[in-house]
Length: 256
Length: 277
Image (tube, rainbow over all chains, first blue to last red; front, side):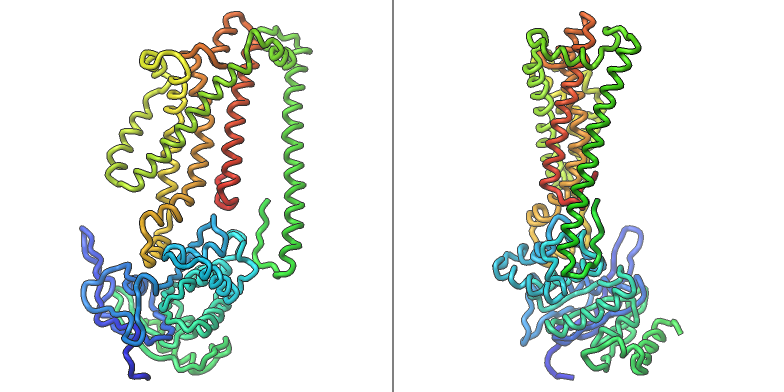
């Protein structure tokens, strides 16, 4: 690996949700680095605090202990402008056309709209929606809506994309297709992506690195590089190496 | 109706769209023909019942007798009275829209305002507004003013409540998304909350139209010297049932006109998918 400073460093991060009745330890001692341009898949069972870690990275949640640092000397990071988010639901504004949905972050950040519009057009092309710029969300299928959400996450050219089970609501076939699309988009855009999933196969297929968390509280169970060549096709899922990686995760999650 | 354009091949899309539009046009035409035919059938049945059943006209006038009152302008002054009633209905309704939406916006901005005033407004709403009529006469004398107020007081709560709900109906994750972009409260309000609340506002307005008409007419029964409600009280004395029926039809027409305007505005402002129909 390169010896340069990591783009993201999480060190001994701990998060407690406090309520009147009791405190709930959501994340305990999570430590990992993300290099610029990596696609890190964070995998673990439901309710293991993956989303909490993602929200800490997004600056939406505070943390009690540990340090979170994003950006390095080589790669500056502006928390207001350099995060793009994709959730399980597309969360498109149904009264806006697709292109205007994609432009929402540019409007909020007050970017030059002429340039942003041009960029949004290119992004829609990249996610395969160039013919649907002027459609309304309800005219799109679930998978297409999620592509639009990905274009929206990229429109302000952020350095970090945070994805919270973005394909969890899609049917299995569409999901496979979107996985391939995401790898292609990642390859073309060169963004750093942190991708949360509870799909073990999905994590290994997408991740250049996989971080495994165990449930209640989220504790780091493993953190390894996935040594499968890019560009990846669905064929690699049948390889022995792929099987070794998924077995390794199943074992960590006590499912073997 | 709306077809599901799930994933059509790109080049067929436009052709398919045109085909869909044509089909929708035919469907709308059929619907309108049916609406008009059914109204005419109802009128004919009404006329036939009165003529063949020899019903006394002061009990139930025939449609032709009812429409004949339109010609006696000096007795009824339809134009003037309808305008007066329309003024109370429209005045009370739009006042309710302005006040209801404004209050809902203020309540959505301030939790304290909401908690302090919402229960009070709900209690005040339990007052039967009709009972306020005689009091309004003491305060404002006879005329348009008190009628607008009665129409307003009876129809503003549904608008306040639906708007409040609409402004609160935002996906928390969407708020997360724009918070990472450091969106201001004003941006969240203008770009997400308010347009998202529009369908709710319109569903409240549709309920309010009916209430505004009822409020204005009751006001004219008790606190007015003109308008269709007042006219009905006048001609009732002489058992002029035809005149009363015509007044009811005119009141209905005022309500339908306002409802039509609301529907038209909704069509212009709210995307089809978001409409609550």
